[in-house]
Picture 1 (cartoon, rainbow, N blue to C red):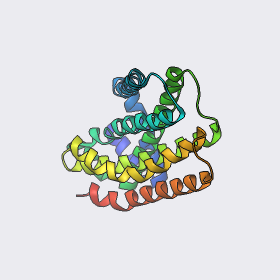
Picture 2: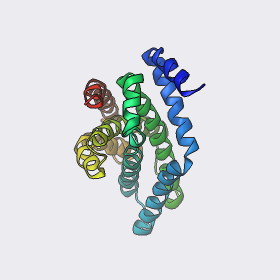
Picture 3: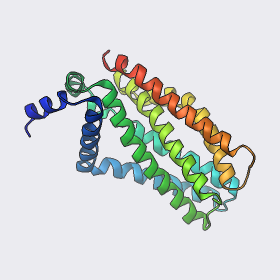
Length: 231
């Protein structure tokens, strides 16, 4: 399918079809440029190794805190790349073809997948260096990780769009994202604390509040992104 046929094909799609098409497009583009994804995974590995060199002896508290620190910075690196390819003429190309909501959701789904992979990699590396798995509530921990991946992706994808439209400044990305992710990180650290046996009594509340923050972040992004994208 040539570029003209592909453009007509994309324009004729419904929004859900555009989301799936753009998601496949995103995955294919990343696979063809694998060094970018590899650099993110290498960053996570290097960060975890440095954490091990600094701590050496892990406790449940340090394990939980450092895990979310590694995940947050890995997710930030992944999220900051969301709209690198959409600058200049590519922005106008997408502007004329795809619904803004379809573009945002496709980026969000891809980032959620990448951040979840990062979270599993970080978990495995932390277990390897700690020489034990401090997580006693595995199912609960995985749910918290999935909610964390969802929420971080929703926040960082939209913030990356703002930063891209403002010139792609990584400094702006950090300034905008940090205050937005603090409430989510607070819940994730507490949920992780329950999973490693540090706290008890409010485990369901942490997850419910996490779901609320995730949905709110995604909803705000869907409402505001069309205005940002058409600016």
